[in-house]
Amino acid sequence: MRTLIGIYYILLLAFLIQPVDSFAEGFSGTIYFRNGESVFFDHIGDTVRIYKTEIDGKFGAKTVKYRFEDFKEVIFADKNCSYNGVYSNNPTSEGTIIVINRQGERFTLTNCEVEVGGLSRVTYTYNDPITKSLRVSSAEIQEISHVIIGEDMGDMKYNPKTKEYFPAMYIFDPFTGEKLVWVNRK
Image (cartoon, rainbow, N blue to C red; front, top):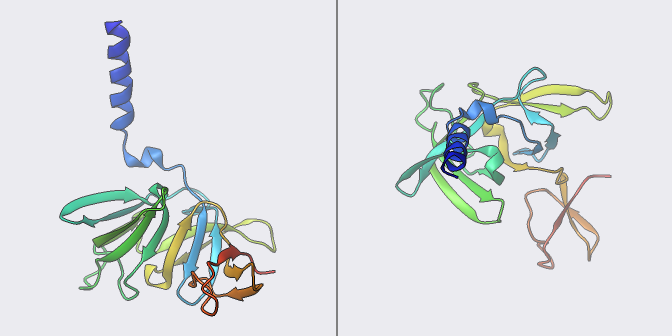
């Protein structure tokens, strides 16, 4: 019995001390840009490798580090912030990020920097709807308003009762107050 418990603890310890890169299986989601456009991506990275995507910041007085895939949504609250102090002498390189966890709880992280595979831009791979092949693109973090991790959420909001469409940044119908749902443009 003791041997079995000892083996269990050794396996658990080996799993817990693996470097973060070994967990980089990738995740899909939708990137929403500040200009109103969006793209459903296959993974963060290029066609050769998946990039580690992490947020370093403060939750209250505590310093924290999270992977993007730990969340349901990541919102870049400071649109003029690079979120990349390592590659920038810009005084606004650390900003505020609002995260929503898988249970729907919302948290604010401050003094955040984002690491995306060691690069200053977010590189992502997406499925081109015309050629049906994987394509690579990238964007500065300042161009991105938020990222929803997981399934394709859609690119517009829709009111099922009034049958009206709204831009992605709307949560409620401004005329009726109804909660809007995600849909893809037809």
